[in-house]
Amino acid sequence: MTIEPPAPGEPRRPFGPRDPGDAWVVAPTGERYWGRFGAAGLLALDAERGVLLQHRVSWSHFGDTWALPGGARHEGESATDGAMREAAEEAGVPDASIRARLVSVLELGYWSYATLIADVVAPFEPTISDPESRELAWVPVEEVDHKPLHPGFASSWQVLRRSLEIRPAVIVDVANVMGSVPDGWWHDRAGAAARLIRRIGALAVAGVPAGVIELPEHTWFPEWVAVVEGQARTAGADASAVEVVRAAASGDDEIVAQTERLVAAGRTVTVVTSDRELSRRVTGAGAAVHGTRWLLDQLG
Image (cartoon, rainbow, N blue to C red):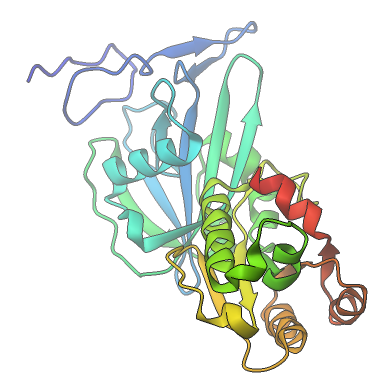
């Protein structure tokens, strides 16, 4: 395989031919931004160790500064995929070790940078697997400002830091959502519940637009909890992105209990139900409420 050397001042690539996205975009005012199709980076947050930062080598653009692992996106590549690919190339970040929480986008019209904020769910040690890194380190959130930061990261850090405090969760009243769609669910409640949970799982992976969930930024990946009751308790669940809770007795009581648990854990909780009494109870417990149509609209 031929390795094409970079032009002067361009980030290097460890192996493989140059991708079409590896090019500068020149702003109307003359500034240069790396990534013909935009760029993306990963803000991996470890609850114990902090944020994973990359100390950039001196020859790179804004060298000897600290920033997130990231780089140019490929043509047609999603922000999430681009951020994860770059993080794997530059820091050896394994996909299975993190859970996406938010995509934040800086949009300039002629160029964009997407930051994927993700929580570390399985601790890992980063490895320098790209010549653009001098050092990789976990930096406590309160110490990030003490580093000499890449100007682009420095300008966005305070906004990103505020977003680290938001952890959305959505609890779904499965029985209520099923009951709102006359699709024959009464003949097979467990099967209908399983189908709904699979659809929620697909939505969990795709993410929810920020405006839909009434939060700032671009796209959120809430924690999803599906509460099933009665005959639907036997529903199989093959959607790993959804936590399925099987109510031992009253589904409403279980939803309230789950709401209280997540609110106590610092989550921003939304409950999906059109049941008025349940809505009153979960609102009192600190959650927002959306009716079943809200979820059905997101599922498409």
